Image 1 (tube, rainbow, N blue to C red):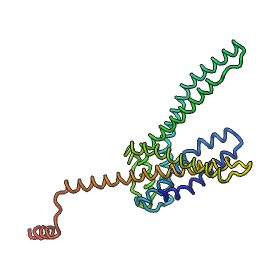
Image 2 (cartoon, rainbow, N blue to C red; image 1 turned 180 degrees about the vertical axis):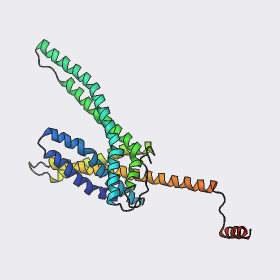
Image 3 (cartoon, one colour; image 1 turned 180 degrees about the horizontal axis):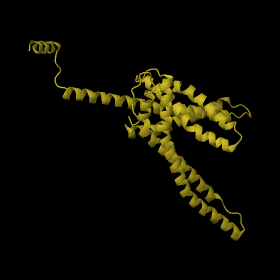
Image 4 (spheres, rainbow, N blue to C red; image 1 turned 120 degrees about the vertical axis):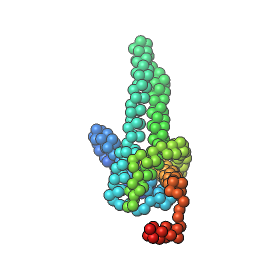
Length: 283
């Protein structure tokens, strides 16, 4: 796990600098939205691929990659494994937001009506509470879909990363889909919780140790903490996906050995084969 993290962190830092650098240095809000839509999935795929490759190397299930195979595997990871999860997240978010907006519109209309009727400044506590519940619901929805998506695609993503090797195993797009679904889903939440606690504690420690006088380091510590959290989270989940992929390969090898043993018949010795050949030649 530490080796996976150390291999993933430099890729995550470089990707974060490019991603957030483009977004923050673009003054036009529409271009910001364009960059978010176009770059989010590919950037996640880059960090995810780095973590998966590091995990596969750690468990001894891959060989060095080639540029061609790595590029193809990167595209497949982004647009075949990750993009469906992001699409489901977006659709579900839009539907739930639309449903919740009806309740918010009702609350806003009630506040406006009370103000128009009484002329007294309304109490916005209820509206603020409603907005907070909407934000919490959206956050939980994204988290649940991401966890279920990783449960369904975790082993398949590891298989995609294995395809980047020079001697790739040629796994098809469905290989590993749904394998160890519940184990990987639970692992996603465990990694999310534990890694968040670790990163928050380290961030608090850094702020307490380095913040002197009126200097405010939050603007620097927050992106660093987010990058460290992403690296740690991706490393933990990638390790689980690599182990799941390794288990699937072992199971398939056992099945093939069982089929050969039970369907191919008893294995003949070299002496028996030579005797059979001489018998055929004599006829």
